[in-house]
View 1 (tube, one colour):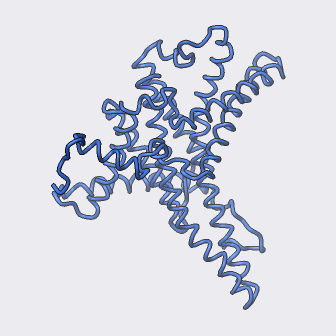
View 2 (cartoon, each protein chain N blue to C red; view 1 turned 135 degrees about the horizontal axis):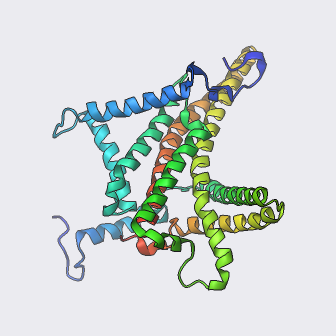
View 3 (cartoon, chains in turn brown, cyan; view 1 turned 90 degrees about the vertical axis):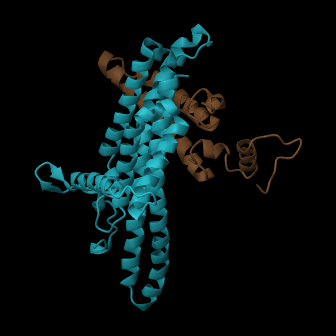
Length: 109
Length: 245
């Protein structure tokens, strides 16, 4: 009531509210990611965990294949590198703000 | 209790002790958590008041918090998974919070428990994706437009990345709870050890005591945050399964 729509500002209340929240930094990237890793320390720990868990899975698969096929250490070496690559991929997705590969395009859904 | 023999015994708090054969203190606290959640929701919603009382407010806030999270992350069609996410969130939240009570046991501090929870999420998400998209789900492991020659590298990497969700999801919750409770115990032991040194020690003991007060507050934050992170990651994975990018 105390803010009647002026000429040249035909946006709806929702749009102006969103613009105001953006200016105040309330809907930033962290908010989209659920506020996780808001601090650099937390973000670093999360990224480290993503790499470590992918490496662990890679090494696990490599050891299992070697144990099954008796080819140690062929698959261990192979999957160590694949695990590392998967870890980097995980961190890349983390840095995009969401774990999805659609990045920000799917935020409106 | 922690300072026997003037050593720091930070890990005995995580020991399982059988109450009845096969039924441990961990199981007991799981039952207490389930009972407390049921009591909160049933007793809280009993008045069905237009203007909610304290308990009803708590129940409504919990419901709306999770419902908002599911709606925002998965979308409207994701609401059919709301009961699952709500149960998961409340179970972990109550497990973490019950662990903050003195003498209580924190069942989320055991990797066996968190891996089980993560596997439930992982299997459910995979089953949902296959049920909705059928064989197209396997296209998830090979992005469209990528050169076919790279398939031998991309597909294993994507599969490892997909499987690593279980590890990161379970280790994050487990490690946070263990680290927090070990820190509390270590600094609490410092208070006892320094307090035993006489008058000078009593002054010195004030520092770890003050730190422990801050840590308790911090642990309540972590207890909530880790339940939230577990639930929101479940929602993000569900989003992936439903929309399949």
